[in-house]
Image (cartoon, rainbow, N blue to C red; front, side, top):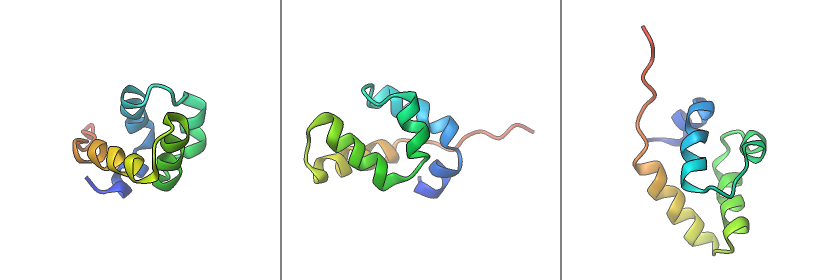
Length: 72
């Protein structure tokens, strides 16, 4: 899934982010606001991993996300 869709539906996807990276708080996710680079940097900082490792984790997570079902 492309990041624009995730950012556009951030309120939905941030729940999945919290499931994957539980150290990130709801408030931090609100501040990140769907910006991919900031999320990757925050993952790197919180988990003490390299930039590349954070990017790889984020790409893996992004790859399994599905579109939000719109209500008719």
